[in-house]
Length: 148
Image (tube, rainbow, N blue to C red; front, side, top):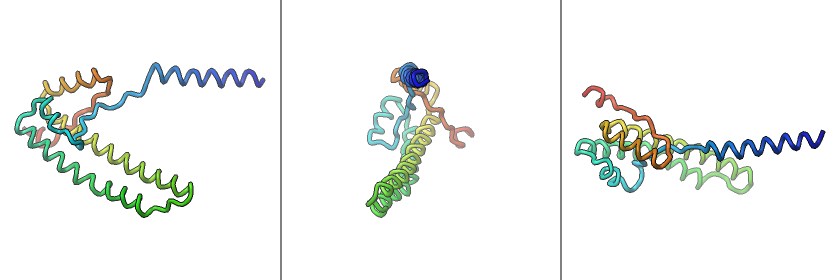
């Protein structure tokens, strides 16, 4: 009986390892407009002046939206008790939640940037994502874009 359970367990572990190897988690193909090198985005996608202006607006809006989350992270790091293992676990959990919100916010703004791309720029983005084995994001069209 013990031998059959251990074989079943071992088979389950092998299955999980093989499936992770055959079907790895594909990461999103982000542009990271919150990053330092937005000039590279402008150059690679040959953005026109209107798109550059919209990119700058998106960056400013993203920075404004990120600020309270980043301040909360700093506050938690400075003020949260850290004397026990439980305290540290709770701190990590709270910090991780805020970090996930920051990542989600960045992805959303990348999607808004994709929403101002023309068809040729978006096709180029898709090809770059495929080359990097990343999952392309779906664009978010801003209301003013839809009215034009």
